[in-house]
Length: 59
Ligand SMILES: [Zn+2]
Image (cartoon, rainbow, N blue to C red; front, side):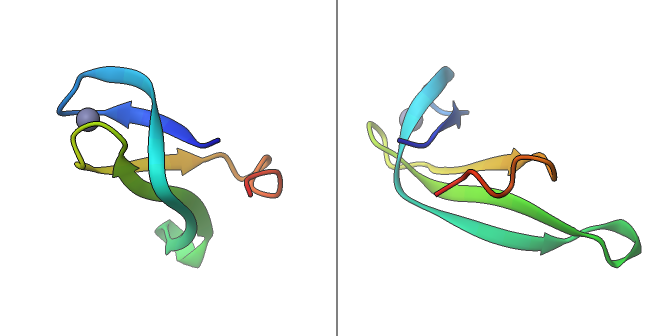
């Protein structure tokens, strides 16, 4: 299960619906991984930056 902070619910570790991993281009052309999805309660879009190190373990 993927969780993230929901800014609308102000809830940490809220379950993300339709979570998927995305890649973003950061400074210096470095690729950063993030998870995006929607709050399972209010439907707000959620976003979570993944560390470069543990990018592989996210499903
Ligand atoms: Zn929410």
